Length: 98
Image (cartoon, rainbow, N blue to C red):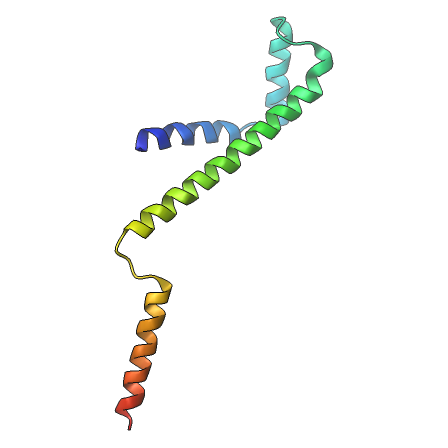
């Protein structure tokens, strides 16, 4: 599980560091190698930035889901548990006064 999370974190960090300038540089290198045509630059850059944004969002969701799952599997008191206990304590204290 941690190996997969490490790989996703690395991919996410790469996606987070993607800028318009980096995408343009990647495209320019592809043009030099004959792998792309200059006319397609704006579409390529937009696609790269959109892809990086999606990867960022996917990583955020994955991390959030994993944290939520880990915390829910732990025997910790929830906000509702604490609220119920506070109500019971308040009731006990109110009854002691009578």
